[in-house]
Length: 80
Figure 1 (cartoon, rainbow, N blue to C red):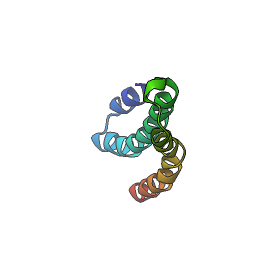
Figure 2: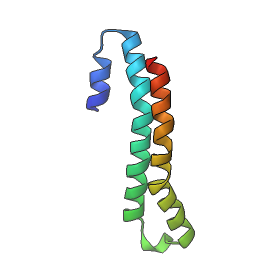
Figure 3: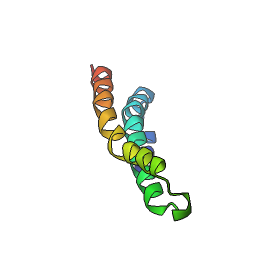
Figure 4: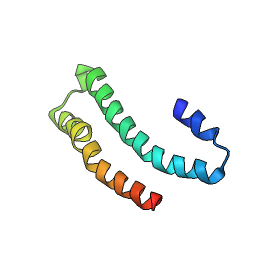
């Protein structure tokens, strides 16, 4: 919430666009990381299955680090 309010206070529309284009992909990765960990910890034992556990483990541990280089390359192109 503080990130969005700080960006929305920027006087320049171009500055807001640049800030959102740099922040939103990172916030999406953080949301994926946190939501999969919450789901893994809070899911009821009745829906536990080995396949679901593997999918959650991959989403939690592989996807965020794999997406970070892509995000930084996009950010570097945006800054240039």
